[in-house]
Image 1 (cartoon, rainbow, N blue to C red):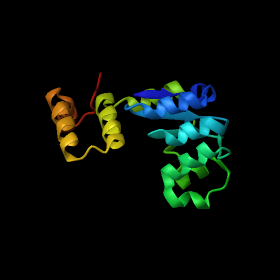
Image 2 (image 1 turned 180 degrees about the vertical axis):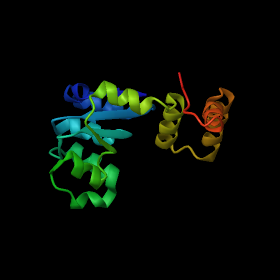
Image 3 (image 1 turned 45 degrees about the vertical axis):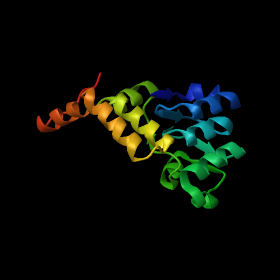
Amino acid sequence: MRFLTPADLRGLDSAALEELQRRGDLMIAMGEGNVGGLAAATLLFADFAVLREGATLQLDLAEAWAGAVWRLGRGALRLAETMSAEDARDAGLCDAVTGSDPERWIEEWMRHRSVVALDSAAALIRSRGGDRLERAEFARLFAIGEPQKGLAAFLAKSKPTYS
């Protein structure tokens, strides 16, 4: 799993964006302030996109528009070039809007989630490998006991804890 903070997004160039898109693990990105250019593109291509309250998303580069189309398909035709974080969430361009700082938000979001399972899901979605690959990956997850942790917590009526 890779978590890109607002500072990480601001420091990206086109080579870094291409490298991030080639990764197989889960990518979560958080933007704040005025998110435009390659930062907007990276946020939109992330598996899970988060904007801080008060942020503005700008679709001011072809790469950012490509990310909007990747998320929305033809629905991107109805978008404004600039929108608030809440409007971006309502349009489907980001998955969450938060008032929390990046470190606190990611800690809370990951608290009861399995990094191993999230990375596996991200890799399967990107690979489009079909039923054989999915069965092999699920067999691997069961062999290392990942689903059993969640099931045991469910049966005990508690939250799972993953290390």
